[in-house]
Length: 529
Image 1: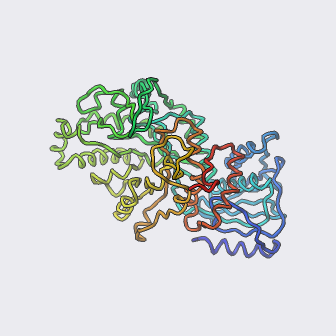
Image 2: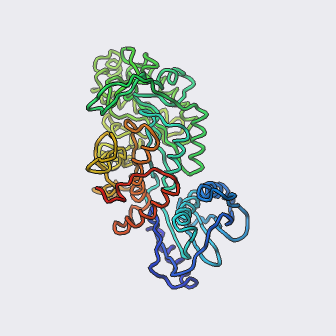
Image 3: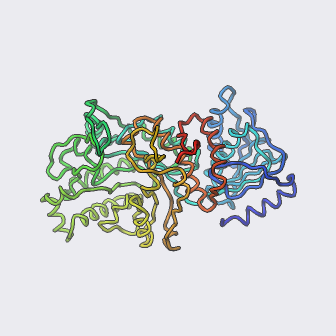
Protein backbone atom coordinates (compact mmCIF):
# COMPACT_ATOMS: atom_id res chain seq x y z
CA UNK A 1 0.00 0.00 0.00
CA UNK A 2 1.56 3.30 -1.00
CA UNK A 3 0.13 5.09 2.05
CA UNK A 4 0.68 2.33 4.58
CA UNK A 5 3.46 4.15 6.42
CA UNK A 6 1.10 7.02 7.21
CA UNK A 7 -1.57 4.55 8.33
CA UNK A 8 0.88 2.71 10.61
CA UNK A 9 2.07 5.91 12.27
CA UNK A 10 -1.49 6.94 13.04
CA UNK A 11 -2.31 3.47 14.33
CA UNK A 12 0.73 3.50 16.64
CA UNK A 13 -0.36 6.80 18.12
CA UNK A 14 -3.82 5.36 18.73
CA UNK A 15 -2.41 2.37 20.59
CA UNK A 16 -1.25 4.80 23.29
CA UNK A 17 -4.86 5.84 24.02
CA UNK A 18 -6.91 2.76 23.15
CA UNK A 19 -7.25 -0.46 25.15
CA UNK A 20 -4.96 -3.36 24.26
CA UNK A 21 -5.76 -4.89 20.88
CA UNK A 22 -7.56 -8.23 20.78
CA UNK A 23 -8.90 -10.72 18.29
CA UNK A 24 -12.19 -8.79 18.06
CA UNK A 25 -12.87 -8.39 14.35
CA UNK A 26 -14.92 -6.35 11.96
CA UNK A 27 -16.15 -8.22 8.91
CA UNK A 28 -16.08 -5.61 6.16
CA UNK A 29 -16.46 -6.07 2.39
CA UNK A 30 -14.51 -4.84 0.53
CA UNK A 31 -11.54 -5.38 2.84
CA UNK A 32 -10.04 -2.11 4.20
CA UNK A 33 -6.35 -1.39 3.76
CA UNK A 34 -5.62 -1.29 7.48
CA UNK A 35 -7.53 -1.94 10.70
CA UNK A 36 -6.75 -1.81 14.41
CA UNK A 37 -9.75 -2.77 16.53
CA UNK A 38 -9.61 -2.29 20.30
CA UNK A 39 -10.24 -5.14 22.72
CA UNK A 40 -13.21 -3.36 24.25
CA UNK A 41 -15.24 -0.20 24.04
CA UNK A 42 -17.63 0.97 21.40
CA UNK A 43 -19.53 3.98 20.14
CA UNK A 44 -23.27 3.41 19.87
CA UNK A 45 -25.02 4.96 16.86
CA UNK A 46 -28.74 5.66 17.25
CA UNK A 47 -31.25 7.77 15.30
CA UNK A 48 -30.36 10.62 17.67
CA UNK A 49 -26.65 10.55 16.74
CA UNK A 50 -25.65 13.75 14.96
CA UNK A 51 -23.54 14.06 11.83
CA UNK A 52 -21.00 16.82 12.50
CA UNK A 53 -20.12 18.43 9.17
CA UNK A 54 -16.78 20.19 8.61
CA UNK A 55 -15.35 21.52 5.32
CA UNK A 56 -18.82 22.00 3.83
CA UNK A 57 -19.34 18.24 3.40
CA UNK A 58 -23.11 18.46 3.43
CA UNK A 59 -23.59 16.29 0.34
CA UNK A 60 -22.10 13.02 1.66
CA UNK A 61 -23.70 13.73 5.05
CA UNK A 62 -27.14 14.02 3.46
CA UNK A 63 -26.66 10.76 1.55
CA UNK A 64 -25.69 9.02 4.79
CA UNK A 65 -28.79 10.36 6.53
CA UNK A 66 -30.92 9.06 3.64
CA UNK A 67 -29.26 5.65 3.80
CA UNK A 68 -29.69 5.37 7.55
CA UNK A 69 -33.33 6.36 7.34
CA UNK A 70 -33.88 3.05 5.57
CA UNK A 71 -32.49 1.31 8.65
CA UNK A 72 -34.16 3.61 11.20
CA UNK A 73 -37.56 3.83 9.45
CA UNK A 74 -39.69 4.67 12.49
CA UNK A 75 -37.65 7.63 13.69
CA UNK A 76 -36.86 11.14 12.58
CA UNK A 77 -33.87 11.51 10.22
CA UNK A 78 -30.47 11.87 11.84
CA UNK A 79 -29.49 15.52 12.26
CA UNK A 80 -26.58 17.22 10.48
CA UNK A 81 -24.85 19.93 12.55
CA UNK A 82 -21.73 22.11 12.39
CA UNK A 83 -20.32 21.23 15.80
CA UNK A 84 -20.71 18.73 18.58
CA UNK A 85 -19.99 15.07 19.17
CA UNK A 86 -21.22 12.18 17.07
CA UNK A 87 -20.08 11.21 13.58
CA UNK A 88 -17.68 13.91 12.45
CA UNK A 89 -16.57 14.20 8.82
CA UNK A 90 -13.85 16.37 7.33
CA UNK A 91 -11.20 16.51 4.60
CA UNK A 92 -7.43 16.17 4.61
CA UNK A 93 -5.34 16.63 1.48
CA UNK A 94 -2.83 14.05 2.71
CA UNK A 95 -5.40 11.25 2.55
CA UNK A 96 -5.46 9.64 -0.94
CA UNK A 97 -8.26 10.36 -3.41
CA UNK A 98 -11.35 8.25 -2.63
CA UNK A 99 -9.59 7.10 0.53
CA UNK A 100 -10.56 7.69 4.14
CA UNK A 101 -9.37 7.27 7.71
CA UNK A 102 -11.83 6.43 10.48
CA UNK A 103 -11.10 6.80 14.17
CA UNK A 104 -13.60 5.53 16.75
CA UNK A 105 -12.91 6.44 20.37
CA UNK A 106 -14.57 7.72 23.50
CA UNK A 107 -13.07 11.18 22.94
CA UNK A 108 -13.84 11.53 19.23
CA UNK A 109 -16.97 9.47 18.78
CA UNK A 110 -16.55 8.59 15.09
CA UNK A 111 -14.18 10.74 13.06
CA UNK A 112 -13.99 10.15 9.30
CA UNK A 113 -11.34 12.02 7.33
CA UNK A 114 -11.50 11.76 3.55
CA UNK A 115 -9.09 12.69 0.82
CA UNK A 116 -12.08 14.12 -1.04
CA UNK A 117 -15.88 14.04 -0.86
CA UNK A 118 -15.96 10.57 -2.39
CA UNK A 119 -13.54 9.31 0.27
CA UNK A 120 -15.78 10.67 3.02
CA UNK A 121 -18.76 8.98 1.35
CA UNK A 122 -16.97 5.61 1.21
CA UNK A 123 -15.98 5.96 4.83
CA UNK A 124 -19.62 6.57 5.68
CA UNK A 125 -20.59 3.49 3.67
CA UNK A 126 -18.17 1.40 5.75
CA UNK A 127 -19.66 2.91 8.90
CA UNK A 128 -23.15 2.12 7.60
CA UNK A 129 -22.23 -1.54 7.12
CA UNK A 130 -20.88 -1.73 10.67
CA UNK A 131 -23.92 -0.03 12.19
CA UNK A 132 -26.43 -2.19 10.34
CA UNK A 133 -24.70 -5.53 10.91
CA UNK A 134 -23.57 -4.87 14.51
CA UNK A 135 -26.73 -3.41 16.08
CA UNK A 136 -25.40 0.13 15.98
CA UNK A 137 -22.23 -0.75 17.90
CA UNK A 138 -19.03 0.62 16.35
CA UNK A 139 -15.94 -0.80 18.12
CA UNK A 140 -13.21 1.62 19.15
CA UNK A 141 -10.28 1.51 16.79
CA UNK A 142 -8.84 2.81 13.56
CA UNK A 143 -9.53 2.02 9.89
CA UNK A 144 -7.62 3.37 6.90
CA UNK A 145 -8.71 2.56 3.40
CA UNK A 146 -8.28 3.38 -0.27
CA UNK A 147 -9.16 1.66 -3.57
CA UNK A 148 -6.84 -0.32 -5.80
CA UNK A 149 -8.46 0.77 -9.07
CA UNK A 150 -9.67 4.24 -10.00
CA UNK A 151 -12.31 2.76 -12.33
CA UNK A 152 -14.65 0.35 -10.52
CA UNK A 153 -17.52 -0.36 -12.85
CA UNK A 154 -20.69 -2.30 -13.46
CA UNK A 155 -22.65 -2.45 -16.69
CA UNK A 156 -26.43 -2.53 -17.05
CA UNK A 157 -28.17 -3.53 -20.29
CA UNK A 158 -31.59 -1.88 -20.53
CA UNK A 159 -32.04 -2.52 -24.26
CA UNK A 160 -32.91 -6.23 -24.33
CA UNK A 161 -35.26 -5.68 -21.40
CA UNK A 162 -36.24 -2.23 -20.22
CA UNK A 163 -35.95 -1.17 -16.58
CA UNK A 164 -37.71 1.77 -14.99
CA UNK A 165 -35.98 4.84 -13.59
CA UNK A 166 -36.62 3.53 -10.09
CA UNK A 167 -35.03 0.20 -11.03
CA UNK A 168 -31.93 1.95 -12.34
CA UNK A 169 -31.70 4.02 -9.17
CA UNK A 170 -31.95 0.86 -7.09
CA UNK A 171 -29.12 -0.63 -9.17
CA UNK A 172 -27.08 2.51 -8.47
CA UNK A 173 -27.76 2.17 -4.74
CA UNK A 174 -26.41 -1.38 -4.78
CA UNK A 175 -23.27 -0.31 -6.65
CA UNK A 176 -22.66 2.58 -4.26
CA UNK A 177 -22.94 0.34 -1.20
CA UNK A 178 -20.13 -1.80 -2.71
CA UNK A 179 -17.96 1.29 -3.39
CA UNK A 180 -18.22 1.14 -7.20
CA UNK A 181 -17.90 4.45 -9.02
CA UNK A 182 -18.88 3.78 -12.66
CA UNK A 183 -22.16 2.68 -14.23
CA UNK A 184 -21.85 1.67 -17.87
CA UNK A 185 -25.39 2.23 -19.14
CA UNK A 186 -26.10 0.19 -22.30
CA UNK A 187 -28.85 2.30 -23.88
CA UNK A 188 -29.15 1.13 -27.48
CA UNK A 189 -29.13 -2.22 -29.25
CA UNK A 190 -30.93 -4.26 -31.91
CA UNK A 191 -33.85 -4.99 -29.57
CA UNK A 192 -34.60 -1.43 -28.48
CA UNK A 193 -33.46 2.20 -28.54
CA UNK A 194 -33.89 3.55 -25.00
CA UNK A 195 -32.73 7.20 -25.03
CA UNK A 196 -34.71 10.18 -26.35
CA UNK A 197 -32.87 12.05 -29.10
CA UNK A 198 -34.71 15.24 -30.02
CA UNK A 199 -33.09 15.53 -33.46
CA UNK A 200 -34.52 12.11 -34.39
CA UNK A 201 -37.80 11.49 -32.53
CA UNK A 202 -38.36 8.36 -34.63
CA UNK A 203 -35.68 6.58 -32.62
CA UNK A 204 -37.97 6.33 -29.62
CA UNK A 205 -41.32 6.58 -31.43
CA UNK A 206 -40.47 3.51 -33.51
CA UNK A 207 -37.14 2.11 -32.35
CA UNK A 208 -38.03 1.67 -28.68
CA UNK A 209 -40.74 -0.93 -29.31
CA UNK A 210 -40.37 -4.43 -30.73
CA UNK A 211 -43.51 -6.19 -31.86
CA UNK A 212 -42.75 -9.40 -29.94
CA UNK A 213 -40.01 -11.25 -28.08
CA UNK A 214 -38.35 -14.63 -28.35
CA UNK A 215 -39.54 -17.31 -25.93
CA UNK A 216 -36.92 -19.88 -24.97
CA UNK A 217 -33.17 -19.77 -25.37
CA UNK A 218 -31.62 -18.00 -28.33
CA UNK A 219 -29.94 -21.23 -29.37
CA UNK A 220 -33.19 -23.18 -28.96
CA UNK A 221 -36.08 -20.78 -29.66
CA UNK A 222 -39.59 -22.04 -28.90
CA UNK A 223 -41.80 -19.31 -30.30
CA UNK A 224 -42.42 -15.56 -30.32
CA UNK A 225 -44.84 -14.27 -27.69
CA UNK A 226 -46.75 -11.90 -29.99
CA UNK A 227 -46.73 -9.09 -27.39
CA UNK A 228 -45.32 -5.63 -28.17
CA UNK A 229 -42.56 -4.69 -25.76
CA UNK A 230 -40.73 -1.42 -25.20
CA UNK A 231 -39.85 1.64 -23.21
CA UNK A 232 -37.38 4.51 -23.20
CA UNK A 233 -36.03 7.29 -21.02
CA UNK A 234 -36.86 10.91 -21.71
CA UNK A 235 -34.01 13.38 -21.54
CA UNK A 236 -35.50 14.72 -18.31
CA UNK A 237 -35.39 11.21 -16.84
CA UNK A 238 -31.81 10.75 -18.04
CA UNK A 239 -30.75 13.95 -16.27
CA UNK A 240 -32.51 12.81 -13.12
CA UNK A 241 -30.68 9.46 -13.10
CA UNK A 242 -27.31 11.11 -13.86
CA UNK A 243 -27.83 13.52 -10.97
CA UNK A 244 -28.91 10.69 -8.66
CA UNK A 245 -25.77 8.71 -9.50
CA UNK A 246 -23.48 11.72 -9.10
CA UNK A 247 -24.79 12.27 -5.58
CA UNK A 248 -23.52 8.75 -4.85
CA UNK A 249 -20.17 9.47 -6.51
CA UNK A 250 -20.96 7.29 -9.51
CA UNK A 251 -20.24 8.50 -13.04
CA UNK A 252 -22.59 7.13 -15.70
CA UNK A 253 -20.88 6.18 -18.97
CA UNK A 254 -23.50 5.99 -21.75
CA UNK A 255 -23.16 3.48 -24.56
CA UNK A 256 -24.51 4.24 -28.02
CA UNK A 257 -23.86 1.14 -30.14
CA UNK A 258 -22.22 1.58 -33.55
CA UNK A 259 -21.90 0.38 -36.25
CA UNK A 260 -23.36 -3.02 -35.29
CA UNK A 261 -26.15 -3.78 -32.81
CA UNK A 262 -28.12 -0.98 -34.46
CA UNK A 263 -31.22 -2.68 -35.91
CA UNK A 264 -33.59 -0.66 -33.72
CA UNK A 265 -32.14 2.52 -35.21
CA UNK A 266 -32.37 1.04 -38.71
CA UNK A 267 -36.06 0.28 -38.14
CA UNK A 268 -36.68 3.89 -37.13
CA UNK A 269 -34.49 5.41 -39.87
CA UNK A 270 -34.07 2.97 -42.79
CA UNK A 271 -31.79 5.38 -44.66
CA UNK A 272 -29.05 4.51 -42.15
CA UNK A 273 -28.66 1.09 -43.80
CA UNK A 274 -26.59 0.20 -46.83
CA UNK A 275 -29.65 -0.61 -48.94
CA UNK A 276 -32.15 1.47 -46.95
CA UNK A 277 -34.22 -1.66 -46.47
CA UNK A 278 -37.07 -1.80 -43.98
CA UNK A 279 -36.23 -3.98 -40.96
CA UNK A 280 -38.03 -4.60 -37.69
CA UNK A 281 -36.72 -3.89 -34.24
CA UNK A 282 -35.13 -7.27 -33.65
CA UNK A 283 -37.14 -9.84 -31.73
CA UNK A 284 -34.32 -12.37 -31.32
CA UNK A 285 -31.07 -12.47 -29.32
CA UNK A 286 -27.57 -12.78 -30.71
CA UNK A 287 -26.03 -10.94 -33.67
CA UNK A 288 -27.95 -9.63 -36.67
CA UNK A 289 -26.31 -8.83 -40.05
CA UNK A 290 -28.11 -5.47 -40.20
CA UNK A 291 -25.62 -2.69 -39.41
CA UNK A 292 -25.16 1.02 -40.06
CA UNK A 293 -23.75 1.93 -43.46
CA UNK A 294 -20.17 3.08 -43.01
CA UNK A 295 -19.95 4.46 -46.54
CA UNK A 296 -22.51 7.28 -46.44
CA UNK A 297 -21.86 10.72 -44.98
CA UNK A 298 -25.43 10.78 -43.71
CA UNK A 299 -24.49 8.02 -41.24
CA UNK A 300 -21.72 10.13 -39.76
CA UNK A 301 -24.02 13.14 -39.58
CA UNK A 302 -26.54 11.00 -37.69
CA UNK A 303 -23.96 9.66 -35.25
CA UNK A 304 -22.56 13.11 -34.53
CA UNK A 305 -26.06 14.54 -34.01
CA UNK A 306 -26.87 11.77 -31.55
CA UNK A 307 -23.59 12.14 -29.70
CA UNK A 308 -24.05 15.90 -29.40
CA UNK A 309 -27.20 15.30 -27.37
CA UNK A 310 -25.58 12.46 -25.41
CA UNK A 311 -22.70 14.77 -24.48
CA UNK A 312 -25.18 17.36 -23.23
CA UNK A 313 -26.88 14.77 -21.02
CA UNK A 314 -23.84 12.96 -19.59
CA UNK A 315 -20.89 14.76 -17.94
CA UNK A 316 -18.75 11.61 -18.21
CA UNK A 317 -15.39 12.15 -19.86
CA UNK A 318 -15.69 8.70 -21.43
CA UNK A 319 -18.41 7.99 -24.01
CA UNK A 320 -18.87 4.34 -25.03
CA UNK A 321 -19.37 3.71 -28.75
CA UNK A 322 -19.81 -0.07 -28.66
CA UNK A 323 -17.95 -1.32 -31.70
CA UNK A 324 -18.47 -5.01 -30.98
CA UNK A 325 -19.88 -7.86 -33.03
CA UNK A 326 -20.30 -6.00 -36.31
CA UNK A 327 -20.80 -8.36 -39.28
CA UNK A 328 -19.41 -6.95 -42.53
CA UNK A 329 -21.67 -8.79 -45.01
CA UNK A 330 -23.73 -5.72 -45.90
CA UNK A 331 -20.60 -3.62 -46.38
CA UNK A 332 -19.06 -6.12 -48.77
CA UNK A 333 -22.05 -5.75 -51.12
CA UNK A 334 -22.61 -2.01 -50.58
CA UNK A 335 -21.51 0.40 -53.30
CA UNK A 336 -21.23 3.25 -50.78
CA UNK A 337 -18.98 1.28 -48.43
CA UNK A 338 -16.80 0.03 -51.26
CA UNK A 339 -16.49 3.55 -52.66
CA UNK A 340 -15.50 4.86 -49.20
CA UNK A 341 -12.87 2.15 -48.89
CA UNK A 342 -11.41 3.05 -52.27
CA UNK A 343 -11.43 6.77 -51.53
CA UNK A 344 -9.68 6.29 -48.17
CA UNK A 345 -7.24 3.63 -49.39
CA UNK A 346 -8.68 0.94 -47.11
CA UNK A 347 -7.93 -2.68 -47.90
CA UNK A 348 -10.59 -4.43 -45.83
CA UNK A 349 -13.95 -3.98 -44.21
CA UNK A 350 -12.22 -4.25 -40.82
CA UNK A 351 -10.26 -1.15 -41.75
CA UNK A 352 -13.53 0.51 -42.75
CA UNK A 353 -14.80 0.00 -39.22
CA UNK A 354 -11.50 1.40 -37.97
CA UNK A 355 -12.11 4.45 -40.16
CA UNK A 356 -15.58 4.94 -38.64
CA UNK A 357 -14.23 4.55 -35.11
CA UNK A 358 -11.41 7.04 -35.78
CA UNK A 359 -13.85 9.64 -37.11
CA UNK A 360 -16.08 9.26 -34.09
CA UNK A 361 -13.14 9.50 -31.72
CA UNK A 362 -11.99 12.69 -33.42
CA UNK A 363 -15.48 14.14 -33.01
CA UNK A 364 -15.63 13.20 -29.33
CA UNK A 365 -12.17 14.62 -28.67
CA UNK A 366 -13.13 17.87 -30.39
CA UNK A 367 -16.05 18.08 -27.96
CA UNK A 368 -13.93 17.52 -24.87
CA UNK A 369 -14.66 13.81 -24.42
CA UNK A 370 -12.77 10.57 -24.82
CA UNK A 371 -13.85 7.37 -26.53
CA UNK A 372 -14.16 3.94 -24.98
CA UNK A 373 -15.25 0.85 -26.89
CA UNK A 374 -15.35 -2.94 -26.73
CA UNK A 375 -12.09 -4.61 -27.73
CA UNK A 376 -13.17 -5.13 -31.37
CA UNK A 377 -12.19 -1.50 -31.94
CA UNK A 378 -8.63 -2.83 -31.95
CA UNK A 379 -9.29 -5.01 -35.00
CA UNK A 380 -9.39 -2.21 -37.53
CA UNK A 381 -6.61 -0.22 -35.91
CA UNK A 382 -7.22 2.32 -33.18
CA UNK A 383 -5.36 5.34 -31.83
CA UNK A 384 -3.38 5.10 -28.55
CA UNK A 385 -5.82 7.61 -27.02
CA UNK A 386 -8.83 5.27 -27.18
CA UNK A 387 -9.79 3.36 -24.05
CA UNK A 388 -10.40 -0.34 -24.61
CA UNK A 389 -12.89 -2.52 -22.74
CA UNK A 390 -11.50 -6.05 -22.96
CA UNK A 391 -14.40 -8.55 -23.00
CA UNK A 392 -13.35 -11.39 -25.33
CA UNK A 393 -10.75 -12.51 -22.82
CA UNK A 394 -7.71 -10.98 -21.14
CA UNK A 395 -5.36 -11.11 -24.13
CA UNK A 396 -6.97 -8.20 -25.95
CA UNK A 397 -6.59 -6.10 -22.83
CA UNK A 398 -2.96 -7.09 -22.40
CA UNK A 399 -2.25 -6.30 -26.05
CA UNK A 400 -3.95 -2.89 -25.84
CA UNK A 401 -2.19 -2.01 -22.59
CA UNK A 402 1.21 -2.98 -23.96
CA UNK A 403 0.71 -0.68 -26.93
CA UNK A 404 -0.23 2.20 -24.63
CA UNK A 405 -4.03 2.21 -24.56
CA UNK A 406 -5.86 2.57 -21.27
CA UNK A 407 -7.84 -0.60 -20.56
CA UNK A 408 -10.83 -1.67 -18.48
CA UNK A 409 -10.67 -5.41 -17.88
CA UNK A 410 -14.03 -7.18 -18.17
CA UNK A 411 -13.41 -10.66 -19.64
CA UNK A 412 -16.62 -12.54 -20.38
CA UNK A 413 -15.60 -15.76 -18.62
CA UNK A 414 -15.05 -13.94 -15.31
CA UNK A 415 -17.11 -10.75 -15.37
CA UNK A 416 -20.45 -11.55 -17.05
CA UNK A 417 -22.74 -11.84 -14.06
CA UNK A 418 -25.67 -12.91 -16.25
CA UNK A 419 -23.94 -16.31 -16.43
CA UNK A 420 -25.05 -19.17 -14.19
CA UNK A 421 -23.75 -19.24 -10.62
CA UNK A 422 -23.89 -23.00 -9.99
CA UNK A 423 -22.95 -26.14 -11.90
CA UNK A 424 -26.37 -27.69 -11.38
CA UNK A 425 -28.22 -24.50 -12.44
CA UNK A 426 -31.03 -25.57 -10.11
CA UNK A 427 -33.31 -22.66 -9.25
CA UNK A 428 -31.50 -20.26 -11.55
CA UNK A 429 -34.10 -20.06 -14.28
CA UNK A 430 -33.26 -19.72 -17.97
CA UNK A 431 -30.03 -17.81 -18.50
CA UNK A 432 -27.68 -17.28 -21.43
CA UNK A 433 -25.23 -19.99 -20.28
CA UNK A 434 -21.73 -20.05 -18.87
CA UNK A 435 -20.67 -20.65 -15.29
CA UNK A 436 -19.17 -18.02 -12.98
CA UNK A 437 -19.45 -18.86 -9.28
CA UNK A 438 -18.57 -16.42 -6.52
CA UNK A 439 -15.24 -18.12 -5.87
CA UNK A 440 -14.14 -17.73 -9.48
CA UNK A 441 -14.78 -13.99 -9.42
CA UNK A 442 -13.02 -13.62 -6.10
CA UNK A 443 -9.89 -15.50 -7.20
CA UNK A 444 -9.37 -13.48 -10.37
CA UNK A 445 -6.25 -11.34 -10.66
CA UNK A 446 -6.77 -8.67 -13.37
CA UNK A 447 -3.00 -8.16 -13.61
CA UNK A 448 -2.11 -11.78 -14.32
CA UNK A 449 0.32 -12.25 -17.19
CA UNK A 450 1.13 -8.56 -17.58
CA UNK A 451 4.34 -6.59 -17.65
CA UNK A 452 4.73 -3.65 -15.29
CA UNK A 453 4.30 -1.30 -18.24
CA UNK A 454 1.01 -2.96 -19.20
CA UNK A 455 -0.23 -2.84 -15.60
CA UNK A 456 0.16 0.93 -15.61
CA UNK A 457 -2.52 1.15 -18.32
CA UNK A 458 -5.12 -1.01 -16.56
CA UNK A 459 -7.34 1.75 -15.22
CA UNK A 460 -10.02 -0.51 -13.83
CA UNK A 461 -12.25 -3.55 -13.71
CA UNK A 462 -15.93 -3.96 -14.60
CA UNK A 463 -18.63 -6.60 -14.29
CA UNK A 464 -21.42 -6.78 -16.86
CA UNK A 465 -25.14 -7.50 -16.63
CA UNK A 466 -26.80 -8.37 -19.94
CA UNK A 467 -30.58 -8.65 -19.80
CA UNK A 468 -31.73 -11.00 -22.56
CA UNK A 469 -33.10 -13.39 -19.94
CA UNK A 470 -33.62 -10.93 -17.08
CA UNK A 471 -37.12 -9.48 -17.18
CA UNK A 472 -37.34 -7.95 -13.72
CA UNK A 473 -35.19 -6.17 -11.17
CA UNK A 474 -35.74 -9.09 -8.81
CA UNK A 475 -33.84 -11.36 -11.20
CA UNK A 476 -31.16 -8.74 -11.86
CA UNK A 477 -30.45 -8.54 -8.13
CA UNK A 478 -30.33 -12.32 -7.84
CA UNK A 479 -27.70 -12.50 -10.58
CA UNK A 480 -25.77 -9.48 -9.26
CA UNK A 481 -25.60 -10.45 -5.59
CA UNK A 482 -23.54 -11.71 -3.90
CA UNK A 483 -21.06 -11.91 -6.80
CA UNK A 484 -20.82 -8.13 -6.88
CA UNK A 485 -19.23 -8.35 -3.44
CA UNK A 486 -16.51 -10.62 -4.84
CA UNK A 487 -16.03 -8.19 -7.72
CA UNK A 488 -15.84 -5.23 -5.33
CA UNK A 489 -12.94 -6.90 -3.52
CA UNK A 490 -11.16 -7.31 -6.86
CA UNK A 491 -11.82 -3.65 -7.70
CA UNK A 492 -11.31 -1.97 -4.33
CA UNK A 493 -9.05 -4.38 -2.44
CA UNK A 494 -7.23 -6.36 -5.12
CA UNK A 495 -3.91 -6.38 -3.25
CA UNK A 496 -5.34 -7.49 0.10
CA UNK A 497 -7.98 -10.10 -0.64
CA UNK A 498 -8.14 -12.90 1.90
CA UNK A 499 -9.76 -16.16 0.83
CA UNK A 500 -9.59 -17.42 4.43
CA UNK A 501 -11.80 -14.64 5.80
CA UNK A 502 -14.11 -13.91 2.89
CA UNK A 503 -16.79 -16.41 3.86
CA UNK A 504 -17.15 -15.07 7.41
CA UNK A 505 -17.15 -11.52 6.06
CA UNK A 506 -19.82 -12.48 3.53
CA UNK A 507 -22.03 -13.92 6.27
CA UNK A 508 -21.91 -10.49 7.89
CA UNK A 509 -22.57 -8.76 4.57
CA UNK A 510 -25.56 -11.04 4.11
CA UNK A 511 -27.12 -9.34 7.14
CA UNK A 512 -26.64 -6.03 5.38
CA UNK A 513 -28.32 -7.37 2.23
CA UNK A 514 -31.27 -8.54 4.33
CA UNK A 515 -31.55 -5.13 5.98
CA UNK A 516 -31.58 -3.43 2.57
CA UNK A 517 -34.21 -5.83 1.20
CA UNK A 518 -32.05 -6.93 -1.72
CA UNK A 519 -32.88 -10.19 -3.50
CA UNK A 520 -29.49 -11.93 -3.41
CA UNK A 521 -28.88 -15.48 -4.60
CA UNK A 522 -28.51 -18.07 -1.79
CA UNK A 523 -26.15 -20.49 -3.55
CA UNK A 524 -22.84 -19.23 -2.17
CA UNK A 525 -24.18 -19.13 1.36
CA UNK A 526 -25.54 -22.67 0.96
CA UNK A 527 -22.12 -23.92 -0.14
CA UNK A 528 -23.29 -24.83 -3.65
CA UNK A 529 -20.67 -24.65 -6.40
